[in-house]
View 1: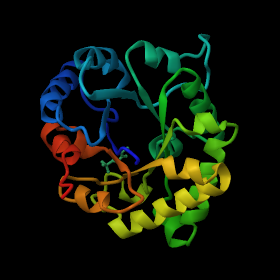
View 2: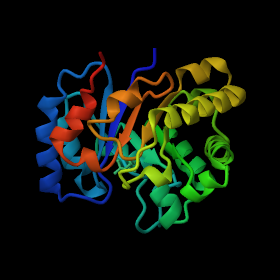
View 3: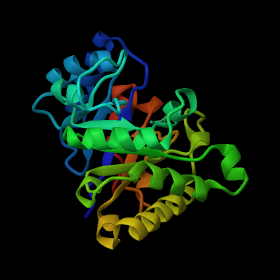
View 4: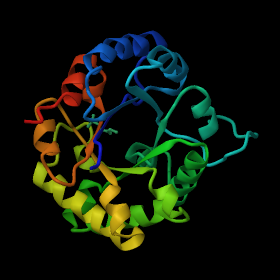
Length: 253
Ligand code: 13P
């Protein structure tokens, strides 16, 4: 069985005090959530404090990005995956569409970052997803399989076992326009098929594929009913402890 992952991406929001306040409010609300892994990704400057305050709880901490470089060096503004581990991160998000769109992140970068993160012992949440234009042109699957091939190139089978894919259609991010459960399922099944062709059936059956894009307390249950949706990567609705906790504790009945 694939254990679901519900991850909150806080993007460039919250001071250290605000991050700690939200994290501490979340902790008791999800303390009994044994059905899934719970992850939050605060801004870099809050990671250490939040991770310290969550130590021993079931809420794990993720970085929102890491460097392609593995060793310390003269790379102003960058943070290595091992430095994320050092401050208590267990996960890192890589290849988010905002990084691809606004910071020129290519598939080559995504794959190098994934390798660096895996070597440092982090679990990787690798994001893929098409824009509205690409979907309307009928290219959604080609775009996503290209991102998968690019992002996973150079990884070994044991590396791939520590990768989680997040399918985040760009047109659904922050727009309130979520993909329907059927649309999301269709792409998740496609991702699993592509993965099976490249990495084998067993790896594909174990691969966790999260959906992201306007996930809210009122649509999570419908998404999670789909056979190939193994969790969610949540933006806006993860910024408040109560709404994120509602998503984590979705109705599984
Ligand atoms: P929203 O949930 O705000 O649409 O953001 C999704 C996202 O980008 C998570 O990484």
